[in-house]
Length: 97
Image (cartoon, rainbow, N blue to C red; front, side, top):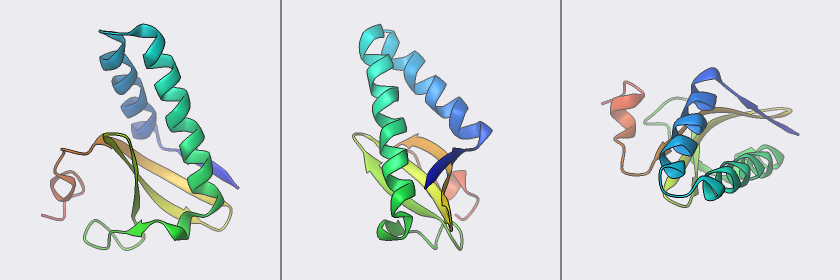
């Protein structure tokens, strides 16, 4: 199974890394690597994570530290839609207020 990242998810990762790098450049690299590995684990069993029908029909989420990995499961893995700080208002971001 594979984790596929949308362009927006890639931007999210870059922004997270840039933010962490302000204080600790080395940790920024390792943290982004951790999130990517976690996304690969999600892709192995995407249906085992929390469904969020309030955000979209197929959307599920998984927590990684202070961040939420927002994804859609597929037969061959998961499409990573966004990686957002847990304090963000997800319904507003996904247009389902």
